[in-house]
Image 1 (tube, rainbow, N blue to C red):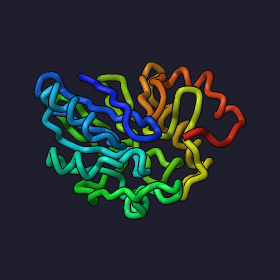
Image 2 (image 1 turned 90 degrees about the vertical axis):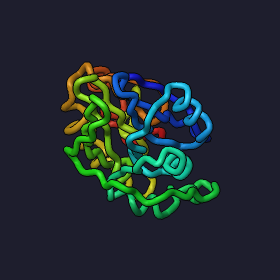
Image 3 (image 1 turned 45 degrees about the vertical axis):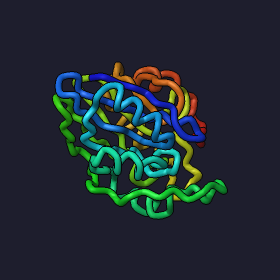
Image 4 (image 1 turned 180 degrees about the vertical axis):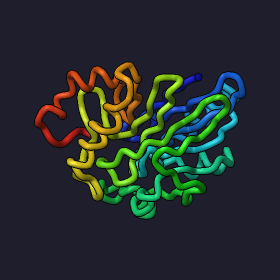
Length: 214
C-alpha cells in the first residue's frame, strides 16, 4: 500500500490517495476541494483510479467529486443514506457557502461489502452518527481504516448537523471501530492519525462528554 494525504478545502480536510504498489491502481477518498492538488499527486505517482470514495457527503468531503470523477472516469461510491445530503449540495448553504454540485453515485455501498483495488481489499463498515450514511473503509491486511468524521485523535465527529445523532455515533465507535484490533491506524477526515487502542484508552469524548469538533 502507498498512502498519500492531501490537505484540501476550507476546513483542511484529509483527502487520501491509497494505491496498490504492484498494480498502480488506487482510490481517492474524500476529494473535499482543491482538485488540482489531487491531480498533481495522481499524475506524479501514475495512479489509475478505480473508485472515488466518499466517507460521507458533507461539502468539505465531496467538493471536488465532479472534477475528480470527470477527469479519472472512475465510479463514485457512497452509502445510499447519504443521498439526501448529496442532493442538498453537501449542506454548504448551512454555512453560507456556495452550493456544491456532485454527480450521483455509480455504486451504493453497504456494510460488509469489499472493494478490490489491485491486491488491496477495502471493507465497507457502516458507521453512522455524524451523518446517516457515514462509512469507514477498513484494510485489514494493512491494519488501517479511513473513518471520515466519526472518530478523531482525542475527539469525535459533531452530531448537530442534519441527520447527526450522538447515541448512534457512540454505538458506531464502540461496536464497530473499537471492534477492530487495537493496533489499527485510523486515518480521519481532519487532523492527525491515531490508533484504535489509543482512542479506547484516552478519548475524552467517550468518557461522558457529548459533541465533537468536526
